[in-house]
Amino acid sequence: MRGGEEISRLGVRLPEGVELSVYRIVQEALTNVVKHAAPARCWISVVADVMEVRLEVIDDGPGRRTLPIEGTGHGLIGMRERVMMYDGVFEAGRLPGRGFRVSARLPYGGIS
Image 1 (cartoon, rainbow, N blue to C red):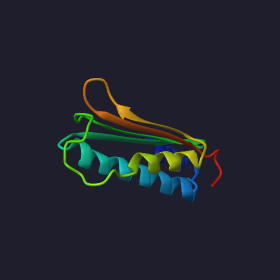
Image 2 (image 1 turned 135 degrees about the vertical axis):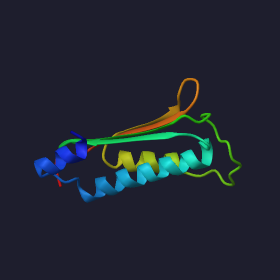
Image 3 (image 1 turned 135 degrees about the horizontal axis):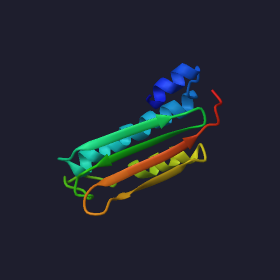
């Protein structure tokens, strides 16, 4: 059973702010894959239970910028700030060999 199905079955819904934060973090992580790792494959995992949401975005790109992009961007900073709003844990970095990983855990304690 997948996390979302389990939540629906339990009658639990993510708090609106947590739901939006998860969406925006995944969106920004995917944007970073396209900007910095393309061409690359990407895997996304979002698992939730009644206490927290865990997400992970992993790509198999070179682990560094591949396309010339103007500006410095603040994607990782914004993702970290969204996670910190919920006293969560955020990690991002190169993987050994190839690839990049974004991981976040947003606790919400079952409050909807």
